[in-house]
Length: 388
Ligand SMILES: Cc1cc2nc3c(=O)[nH]c(=O)nc-3n(C[C@H](O)[C@H](O)[C@H](O)COP(=O)(O)OP(=O)(O)OC[C@H]3O[C@@H](n4cnc5c(N)ncnc54)[C@H](O)[C@@H]3O)c2cc1C
Image 1 (spheres, helix red, strand yellow):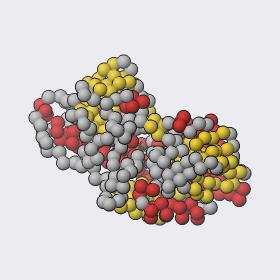
Image 2 (tube, protein in one colour):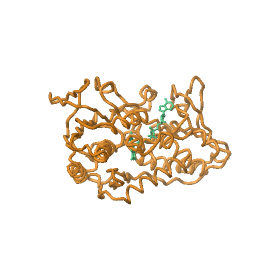
Image 3 (cartoon, rainbow, N blue to C red):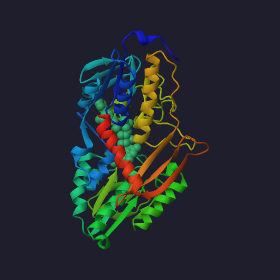
Image 4 (cartoon, rainbow, N blue to C red):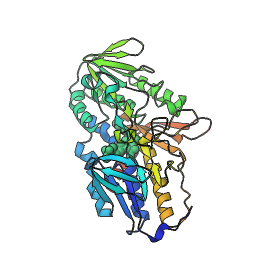
């Protein structure tokens, strides 16, 4: 509903400078006149684009190409505060950043996740991940010089960011090993904690990815939860052990520490925002992206992916700016989204559809092609060059 607050200056504080936060701040700035303040708060100076970490791993990108200073948003009239959010009080819409309080008329929470590395003992010592920029950088030379033995890729919990990413890592590792002409001496296996690749998207999508893995002679074992790792051996919940020469993992996730102690968190252990408006139970407080848990008809949550954080950001920014501008707000997140699945050799597949469909998500997968790979590159360009 429209309100009459448009006469006074309003401040919108966006918590988090990742995909959701940057998209929200940009959209708000475009929709609101300069009387109103858009403030973005992030711990690190830089925005990093996680979808491109796999290209850092495969040597196709340098870290500087997937990193950008958030301060560049100030040119657009967005105030950027770099600091650690220590306390969030959604009732008074006040946050504490490095000891200083900031009050908001509207608050958008997009703080992502923290990696819960200690939930699998030995994992971080025995293996390396492509899910951080540092890890992707370390993996790059290690994979390039890998000439013989077994690469074991694991998803260390059924729930993680970007359902496609671990499978993309397997295809890209296979590409490097084949390009180096040592594939005959290297075994690549992926063991997933979840029952199938991108399982929330349905059996057809899972089966299509399994076929692509088989085509590339990548062994796949679903529902195989890693429980611990030591140098050279991974142990699984069914009592089996697997030897490896290189362990690559997708880390388990948990809520960022600052949220874990806040009243925003619901019984699921995540922020349970309204799945269409992303509003929380606190007036004028919204939550988007990976820190939310949005229910699907199949009893599982919406996958955590940048494409959804982005779409939700636009909905929230449109509704906040409509409210401030005294207009009716009608924007709603409808559960549609798509995700590229990079398969190497300059190709990507594409899975897209309606995750809110009844009685189950309606998602189609398109076979790998050059076109989808180029679309993924174009999306990266858009984020790195236009958003920041
Ligand atoms: C390897 C990999 C590949 C991926 N590929 C894709 C893909 O192809 N397509 C896709 O859609 N998604 C992909 N994703 C997922 C995507 O990156 C996330 O879903 C997306 O970044 C979520 O956006 P967000 O705004 O919720 O969180 P984030 O982008 O993680 O942003 C959260 C921000 O909050 C900051 N923060 C956290 N706590 C604090 C605090 N206390 N104080 C201050 N700041 C704080 C963080 O530093 C961070 O900058 C991929 C992820 C990975 C790891």
